[in-house]
Amino acid sequence: MSNEMPVIEMPNLALAMPEIFMLSMTCIVLIVDLFMSDKRRVVTYLLAQLSLLGAILITYNQLGADSVKGFSGSFVRDSMGDILKIFIYVITSVVFLYARPYLQARNMFKGEYYALGLFGVLGMMIMVSAHSFLTIYLGLELLSLSLYAMVALNRDSEVSTEAAMKYFVLGAIASGMLLYGMSMIYGITGSLIIPEISAYISANGADNIILSFGLVFIVVGLAFKFGAVPFHMWVPDIYHGAQTPVTLYIGAAPKIAAFAMTLRLLVDGLESLHVDWQQMLMMLSVLSLAVGNIIAIAQTNIKRMLAYSTISHVGFLLLGFIAAGPDGYSASMFYVLVYALTSTGAFGMIILLSRAGFESDSLDDFKGLNERSKWYAFMMLLIMFSMAGVPPTVGFFAKLWVLEAVLNADMAWLATVAVLFSVVGAFYYIRIVKLMYFDKPVENAQIVADIDLKVVVSANGVLMLLLGIFPGTLMSICQAVI
Image (tube, rainbow, N blue to C red; front, top):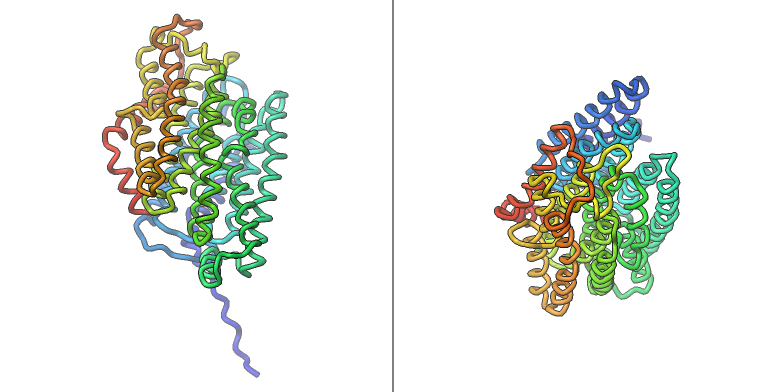
């Protein structure tokens, strides 16, 4: 009988250093906030920003290294994940900056917003680096629970509370469907690790009815998280019902995490079933393009309009996956990064124009903005043109690259449908430009905001133009990491 002690292999904690750092800092933010008075709450905000800055530096330091798996294969650190994480940090940092004056003006400047926001970022980081069904689900639930609580942040608002309840119930159903699909695939393959699932399906064939059923449930779960039609019913109500800083948070960085989750599940794990999920995504894409763009025209509230706009952009984003190749996936990655930046700028403009007692979320609130401030009217013009895909803004190249991938996959009819609905969508974006430049202002109050908010909103708008003039760098990064 051997007296040797069994060797226990320690996991490579360095792989998850950004996640460990973010978790530690979030706990510190929670504890420090307990001792902060309302006048000193800015310390919580600064700690949250410091957490994101530290995560950027740690992740950037790992950038460029080879892909490495850890934690028994359930976690992967690769270049794609690092780039997506850095964008998540940067966009969340901008979101926090935009949110601060809004929350201060309404006596809502509490540590909960930033603590929940950081926990949500941690969930997104786990989703991006997940290499196991279980890890993906844990990251998704951490993000989802944070978002449910953020939507209900204003406890005195019946609209926000109702939106949070709808989001929670529908989100729980979608999570259950995703988990059920994962369990069916686990039952067939005997593994939760994504590469092992892929290897099993490649070796044993994809002609299995239980695999197909599992795939359907997974696609339904993914479609809900994206807000694709017909699983879009939560998007307009949550965008409208939540406070603008919460809507801003939901509409930006989580889309990047949803893209990563889709890539890990469908491409890394279930690529052998691509003929099946390609057809399902095709239906979701066409429906999202049609419903999102057509219903957005009828909206008078800009937050609801941007909600339906998000649905239409999800339709475009899915086109890259439908192309089912490296060019398509890199085009989708470029699209989701550009969309996150553009969406952040749009909601930043809403916050810039709002003040205590005035939300500035009606289309009429943008009337005559050019007379009030030519510079911010121009910034909003750049943001709307980028969403519409008008050159030379970066949104044009995002749509062009996705359409090129679809054409290269011999789906000219799908590209034609996307272009037609994109033209329809251009109407409601250009309508805002018309209101700003050709209508008389309903609101004549001077735009008053902190200098940091003004500078970052301006940079956000100018970035739409600069990335459109020089899109090559971001495009090459997306191609390289995919």
